[in-house]
Length: 435
Image 1 (cartoon, rainbow, N blue to C red):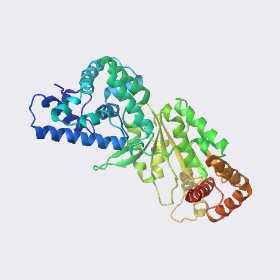
Image 2: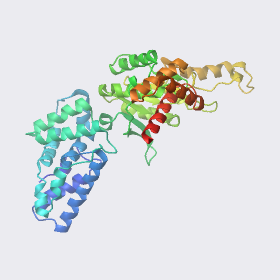
Image 3: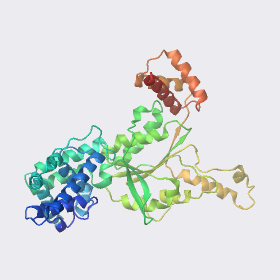
Image 4: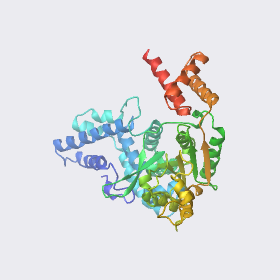
C-alpha cells in the first residue's frame, strides 16, 4: 500500500491530480477493488496527462519517473529550501524527510507493466519508454528539461532511500528548488485575489555579451558590478542610459545568461507594478539566489508619481534592502523624470519651492550608484558593427556594396545604431533565404 497522503513535507502538489489517481490505481487494481471501467478510466486519464506534460516540457523516457521528479524539484518546503542553502541538513527534519521520500521511492520502484498486464494495454510500455519530438517543449528549454530527465534516471537507479535522499539533496544544493531553481527570468503577475505573484518567463532569447559589438568599457563596468554582486561583495544599483537601439537591454540579457549558473536571477518589473516591489522583495530575500529587479525603458512623465515607490525601495524606507537584491534599469533619459524649463526657472505659480521640485526629481537617479552611458555609434563604428554581424552570419558581399546598402538602410530606418545594423542584417538574411 502506497499512502501518498501520509506525506508530511511533500504534499499538496501543484499538478498533483495524476499522483492521486495513479496511487489509487496502484493500490486497488490488484485487489480488485476497482471495476474495469474505473481502472481504465484512471489509467488512460493519467496517461493522457503524462503525454500532454511530455509535449509541454519536452520529457522523454519514463514519463512516470519524469513526472515524479518534476514534483520533487518544484516542491518548496522546509527541507528542500534548507538543502538549497546548506546542502545536507541535520536535525529531526531529516527523519521527516526520510519518511516522505520512502513513499516516493516506492512510487519510483513500481512496475507500470503490472497495470498494462492487468488492463491488457500496451500503453504502459509507451509511458515507460516515451520517445519525444525533437524540440524541448513549449514550457522548458533544453537545459531545464535535461536536468529533470537526468535526475529522474539517477533517482530510479537509487538502491535505497538514503541514496535517493542524497541524490535529491545534491540536486537541491546544486540547482535549487522550485521556480527559482529551474528558471532564469520572471515577471510579476496578479492572481484572481489581486495578490502579486512571481511568474517564470520560459522563453528567453539567449544573448551573450559578446554578441554586442563594441561598448567594451560600458560592458566591463556592468560585468564588474554584477560579478561583485554574484560573489557576495558590495555592489551598486545600475542605470544604463543612452540612445535607443544601442544595446542596453541586450547587455542585461547577456549578464543574466553569463551569471545564471552562479545563481543570478532577474525579475522584470513594469512601472505600474512598483507598488508591488516590497511584496516581491519579501518573497526573495531569504532565497539562495541573487536577484536583479529589471526595469526596461524606464522614464516618468511630469504627472506620474510611481517613481516615489522606487525611491523608497532603493534607499529611504525603514526596511533595509536585502543584500541579494539589486535594481538594474535602462532608459533613454539620463534623469528618468521629465523636467520642464518652468521647473528650473520657478515659473510654476502653484509651486513656491521650484528648486525642491527639481531636487526631488533628480534624487531618483542619485540612488543608482552606477550609471553607464551607451551612445549611438558614429559612421565608422556603425560600419564596423555591420561588417562584424555580416561575418558572424555568413553574409558574403563585397565590402563597399555592403556598406552602401547599410547606409541606405540606416537613413530610412532610424539612423545609426546597433539595432538598425541588426535589422539590416536580418533583412539581408531574409532576402537570401527567399532566393
